[in-house]
Amino acid sequence: MFYRVCQLILQVVYKIVFRFQPVGLHHIPAEGPVILCSNHISNLDPPTIAVFVKRNVHFMAKAELFSIPLFNALIRKLGAFPVRRGAVSKETIRSALQLLEQGRVLGIFPEGTRSAGGSVGKKGAASLALKSGAAVVPVTIVGSYIPFKRLKVIYGPPIDMTPFAELPASEALERATEVIMERIRSQTG
Image (cartoon, helix red, strand yellow):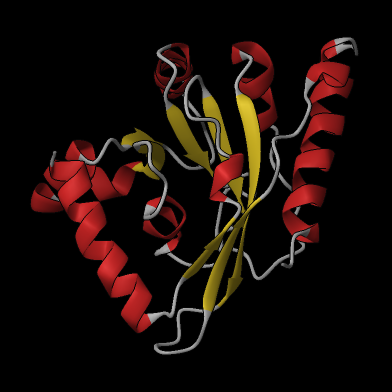
């Protein structure tokens, strides 16, 4: 309930302040495990890619955010869980896989950090997708967070991960990551 109330408030704010336009929301499966893989341009990206999604979206958030008392409680209530930058722990991977096993939606930024574009994706999203069988939906944020300028989020068709399952593990992760990043970059709507 808390998640939905926050989402409704943010929908109004995003529509007015950012002239927000979601495109392709129908590509997100209505049930089952899903990984939303997005480019990362701002600290506002997590709520941006989740604000109009009909399902709760869970995010890994940098561990430092969980040391801020009130913010810690807020982001946990919204479904975030901590990750240490530079060293993803087994606990973080276990938490992500557990969410996917429960048929939930996980939001990931494969670049690992904010980037103006063109940085190489890390293999975590591909690894989680191949281990869990989750649908991978490429998400592209187009525009900027300048008030009253259009901000668009494009949700593309899920990426077929089955061809990668037949490859040796390291090659599968490499190629799947390349495909995910290429799809994110190619969506301009």
